[in-house]
Length: 130
Image 1: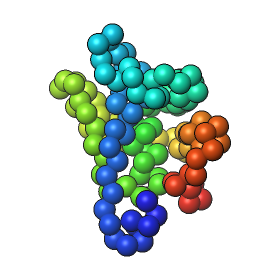
Image 2: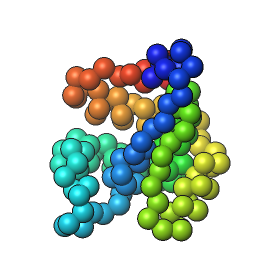
Image 3: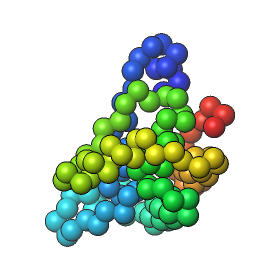
């Protein structure tokens, strides 16, 4: 992502809410999302619970928290967010303009850092001093 920014290449985040996993959506027995890696691994479930609790404790929705986090990275030009109904669409659109309390984005980043990078040993391509 930093390479894309440096070269003027636009970036789009797909599945910004991890296909509903981060927002707490429940997946039925026949839902293909049940087979995604983050649905089968407890450390991702723990991170999702921590993000939802962080949002709740700070009086914001998970989408508002995630949008604020994405904006703070300064690396994304747009995100693709799926909506299953009109209410989801309206809620997600409203979340774009919700002010997020100071410090909450850094806490969300720390949750991601711990689970996605430290525990898996992946390089954090988003790390640029946030």
